[in-house]
Image (cartoon, rainbow, N blue to C red; front, side, top):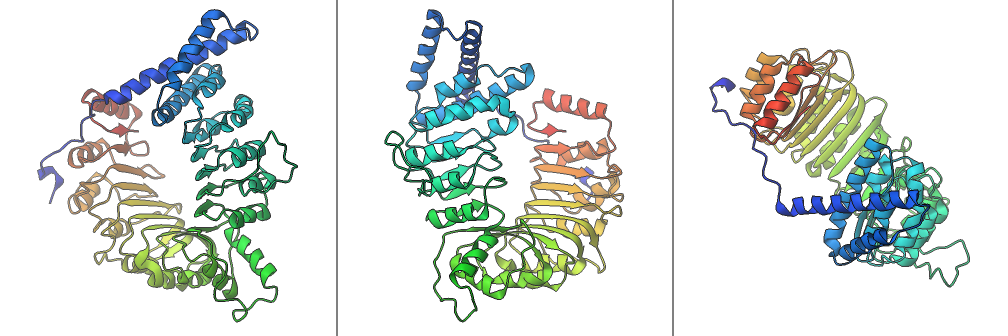
Length: 511
């Protein structure tokens, strides 16, 4: 049916901001401005604090002291956000240290400083790295901490002594963390402990740990983490396979399937990632890993197609990410046939995928809700027919770099049964995708009534115009984000549409 005959339902209107949210913003602004003022005055007066400034600081301290922990955690995020905006716009970091000094309280259970550290240069965050250990030593109830890109061994040492209930920690991209720091988390110290430091007990309750791109650590250091944290389930580290390869070689030097015990030391790891280099494990190593890690439900690999059937012994896998080394052949089809019925999230990077792989994906993976396909080309060497595939699909991302791009038949293969699709991100050459095709072949036959985000990019530009943009806004009431930057639409037209949506108070972002 032609979309023009349908009743038009525009996106939802913006809802009024909750009083609670407004109150948080006002208090956060007051704290941020007060801390900036105090730090500025201190700098101008050679670090001498006047009586009026002391009164202001005491007032802020009392207010924060009487604020419940959960509210203080929200305030911390809000104040840091405002502080970053101030730093970026005015090129001044005054107020940052004072704000952290005031807000990092013993009652906090969750602290997220990753967003701040990852966006600011080291010369600004260096004083924070000095302050943090002094504040963390009093935060014994801390259970979640994000220090993305700026953690140090000293901070990890403090955590190991003072934060026994820590469960979630992210220290990825931190170039000052070494193996010694990782061992602190396990309760292992290379230094002679001082009585004033306290005992290095470690953080044995950690179940989620981010260790990506720690350039000063080694596989052996991370191995100590795997062996020393009994509750660990999710560890973001791209050489987990290498850890177990070394364990197997040390435990069973002349290992064979018959010599490996039926019951190996079992770990609670649910996330397995070996993407640092091409993973070509022997059958013995696969058997050993699956015995040691029977709870894996998230699998991320960089492997040749021929090795994929080896991983089908993990029957609980729901989240599967694969970078295929070389040509894609029958191995991927075999894997989908064995494990596909459980897969909910699939992410595949490839050089070339053929029609038979796409058919196997649709046939053997009926539960997939999030699908990402990234590669050089799609080889449509067979006709594609959607036999009620992808009925559960909610998120579809596809990026194809070949100049020939994709065909309309390929796009409809994924969309024709995806009635619950919420997010569609497509980056490819789509010369066929003009206003008429989108109207009659897509929206006319397969209404995307639940679509919330749409981003279609192409080189050359996608032959869609403002006509389609307005049609989408009328027939997709759930739309929250629409990207037009790579369409045949002028910047002026985009700005006018943005203004129109804002004046009409629609809850949608146009970019």
